Image (tube, helix red, strand yellow):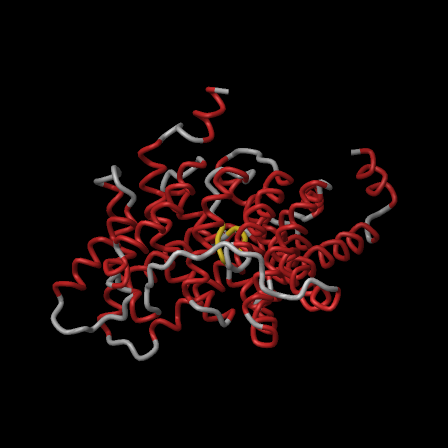
Length: 398
């Protein structure tokens, strides 16, 4: 018990705490953006992120993996919010959690074994591209100083570890760029406060204020099923990637149950459903946040930032956070998958490239992954059908 506690919570407290703080700073603008996508008050997304982070720290299956409100899920909520209102979204979030919990109970995490590595690589590469493209909106109408701050932020992140590793370089970069913002005369930079007003008001736990009948169920069920499937796909693919990155193997069914508990509780707290996030998970892990303590610190830090340091959060320049996300995109993208494409079987490279193309074209990770699995199966079948009989026999024997 003591060994397990140390492995999952206290193997390196200093790095976990610093990584959690760094991660949460990158989470703030994304959480605000997800709220705008879903058509809800920005604080709904912020409190959802806090709730999910705190609960997934205890119930999740992958220590160090960051879960929060997510853009891929926010897109699916837009119609329900517009047509039925917020209370129906809370009910759909609650139902999403129940469905995901049952996915874990019935051990549906094992289905990820059927997703080829080429599809996982395509998922990661396409997500890096989508994250990068999503940052471009912050440059619209901004002066050249915005570009300069982003470039300096990226330079600090990559250069600082050569001389100083006690504090994660992204955190140092954000602090330095925030100080620079204060020192520059005028108001040349867009800040977090320009995206939304940070209001420190606690949400009140309540059962969604909707009629409890079949008509309500039919209204929220399609959205809940869609959210559960997308959350399943993005979470378990992220978990697979983080497992590979850390050289560990974690329980996908436990992660599904944890996601279910977190989303169900978030629905009761008046929040929106979420799932694991690749970018923030990579930030956390690469800065030493590999235990449950890192995500717990992230949740607590976000709560403190909103209630005690709202003005400080509002003053963080968006350019610094964009610089961090550009760094993450570079780190996430599997450059070897293109650099060494001649060494990879043609079917695997084609599957990866088509998965990337479909995800980027549709902005839907679930569609891209399902299409990638189907493409991989077709290409493998066609390749095997062209093999000589002797080769097929040898392949089967192996």
